[in-house]
Image (cartoon, rainbow, N blue to C red; front, side, top):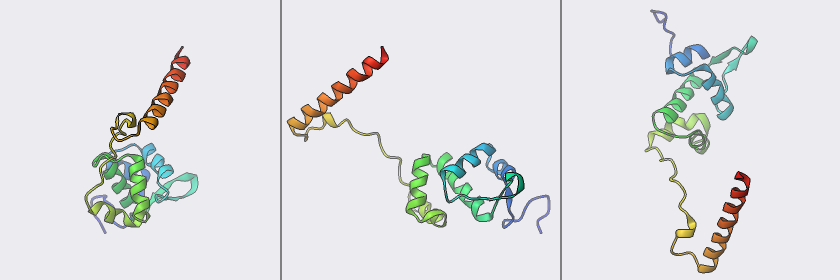
Length: 137
């Protein structure tokens, strides 16, 4: 038994307890449930959420990836799905984290593009610029 009002590591956590532990709002945890299918806390009467120890560990990992390591929601989703879901989260982050993908390079300025393709891409670009200009008016 744990003294001082603290719960044991293997105890279930309410959404309030988990959000207070991580210093985030409860609505963020509910949002994460919509974005990460691996995160499924128990829901009792009145939709009261109870996070199992494995759910709490997953929430802590998601929080770390998003707020400490700089991943995007999509990046964490990919990481969790590539590593076999919630069970592989620790293994996934034990290695060096993968950086967020760099911004795309403008293809038209690449020197190895054949002139015909370059001209076609420029025509598409100009058409899009023209379409956007008419929408702005």
